[in-house]
Length: 75
Image (cartoon, rainbow, N blue to C red; front, top):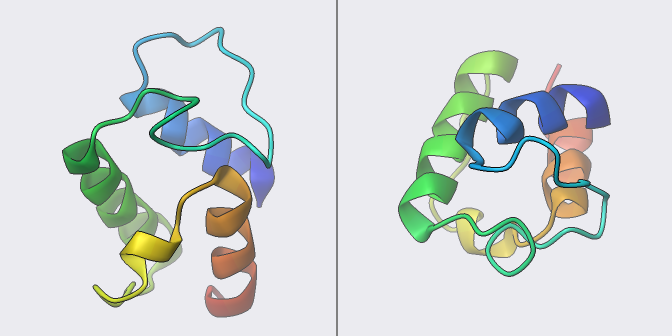
């Protein structure tokens, strides 16, 4: 799940060579804007055929948050 998450994140990042870890913060560490985070959530929804409720999006602050959410909710 981590590798698939990183692959999607890298599509939205300017710097492909930046190290991404479970603790990487989407905005602070990876430099993603709030609009990019929304687009990334949409990409995860498409990739994993799930729907992420709007109330959950603000809780997805790190790569680990996304991986954990997907592991719990994706099939």
